[in-house]
Image (tube, rainbow, N blue to C red):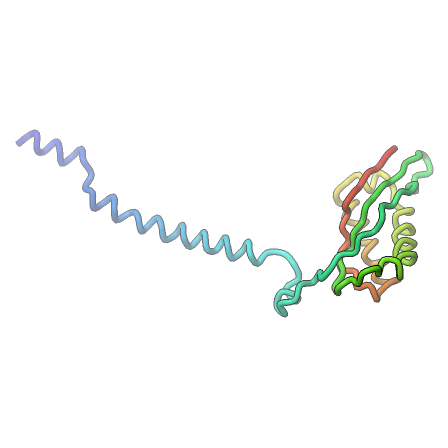
Length: 156
């Protein structure tokens, strides 16, 4: 009888272990569903998502730019590849039609850049903003919504 008593104290009842299972699974499923919803709805333009229309419909690839930077005390140059995200479909051969205007606008903005500013992620982000606003102002027919750096090299 003493042997029977020890067995009851040392062994947990199997139904007690099973009853905790659903109590742990339900909150985990809720957290996973909330995480998936947050991940799938993060970032981007909410107005474009609400209408079901993507903001960027095509990209326009530009030839690489190589230029001297605006640092009077040191000689440095920048080599940068740029693609433009457009809010409309780009037509074949369109780069040639407005290429001079686009390249002139970009070169004007890049030529004012300083090496120390471009060495930080924040400086690169500001440069993208300046490029996008300059292109939207000078070439609104293009529909530039985003500037992508495909190559970025500074040599001092």
